[in-house]
Image (cartoon, rainbow, N blue to C red; front, top):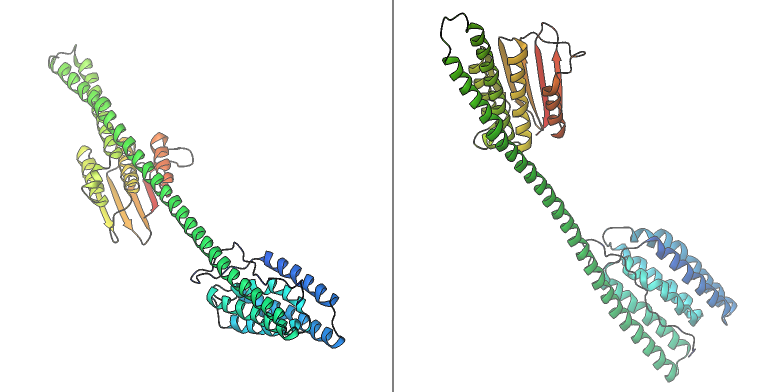
Length: 408
């Protein structure tokens, strides 16, 4: 028995097992470098050992055949997602070539350091372990065949038992570590996803809370203040004597002040409604738009129509608030600036988009020279934050149409 015969212990990697293949080890490019180093060392050891000319030819041919056998038959199997029947076929050929080399030089057992890991790369762990046993038992039997003495047989048997047992224990431990790593990675991914969802929910809740706070502040300050101003102005107007030419000018100014205060009170209430989604929680978007249209028609000498087409569905609260706010702002602009007689509000539901259009027959304006002021700018910002687009079509004397397209 030679003293330099190594233990054929497979070197397992820390790579992850294949999905759906418990215990199968994923191959990676670094294994190619490892195989090349072990193969080159084994070739040098085999060629340097005592061997006949015929044995050298047989060993060299078998070693040379291992290279294309791995490159064209074994390497592609390591890239597959699932084990196939070709894996055992490849390993069977590998055992035959290994036996040919081992039969000529017992030092070829060094090559098992490169061959055993392949058993776990091209097939499942259970089948791979079978071929690890076959490979080491073959090496041990060939060693006994060359040295049939009892001492040599017992040594070969001990080496085979130790190599197989160590391979089994080490491979099972490594696979367990890999599976735990996979579970941790899945848990981390799930935690990150949950954290992102919580952050989005907290952000949305913060936005809604801020909207409610602003709505309450406007209602308790501006709206109440304008209501008080209207009451005081009406009281002052009532104290003036009718028909007194000395108070006619003051009366006209008071009437203008009352009209301005009423208009600003309406704007403040409109803003409160837009900031608070409560109006949308008890009704659909189409119903809310219809109520806004009716309120505008009642407050001004306008004919306002509202219609909805397509299959109505609930949209995200933020999107519905944006559409409602755009409609309110557009109708307010019509009342103040357009001098229109009729307005049409159209809500259209498509497969993945929702379109809102507000068109009037008023005076119109030149969109190239008029930016629309703060109201139109605010509409653009709201629509942009909702991921949509807004278009303003108008011409002097031809009315105005504002169309909004948002995902939904």
